[in-house]
Length: 239
Ligand SMILES: [Zn+2]
Ligand SMILES: [Zn+2]
Image 1 (cartoon, rainbow, N blue to C red):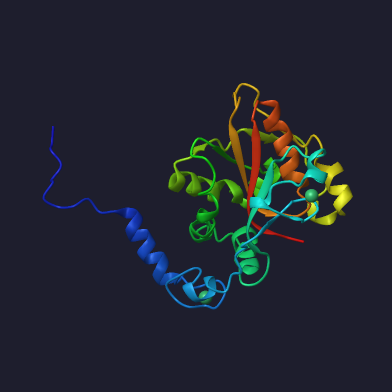
Image 2 (image 1 turned 120 degrees about the vertical axis):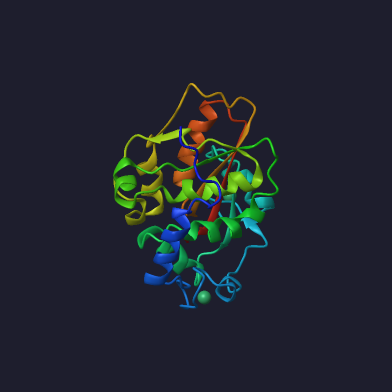
């Protein structure tokens, strides 16, 4: 058998491809156009990070975004922690990530969200809101799963991206009123019953929260699998 010649390093084809891609399409900040970065430090410094958190339903200030007492009866969610205000430049970055397919922005977005995950117990399970098959085919990736995957690596939390499956997809939530949103996602998710979450705390990652209906519908299913607490973690609140 011919031994490989170890005198020469095997060429790293990925690095070479990246090099040519960088030459053909130089990396630049999606907000200001600064070269060699996708989201420059200066633009990142303009994000308004949340110092206080709110009940996801009535927006009353609560610790870490816990659901308040008066909203508790209708909620499967324990609370929702929100990273920042949904305004520029974050708004543009999320848009580019989701609708202009700049998938590599997941690294910057995960890096920014990471401190908001630190307060959760280390034995929590991290999951994400699933995409519908149609959305997944269109975008090519689940935007929430990509970021959650990096967050799991950084935090060491157990990552279970496929705990939930989207069973129906009616009207996109963005086209509906607050009340209609809850109705629209009712029974839109199904849990994988063979996975036991008994006594576990689960964190569901998503990019945005609006009415909280989607996260709540997911939480309902996770509770059926035995989860004792279900938190949402999102980049921003869009309302
Ligand atoms: Zn910039
Ligand atoms: Zn409330």
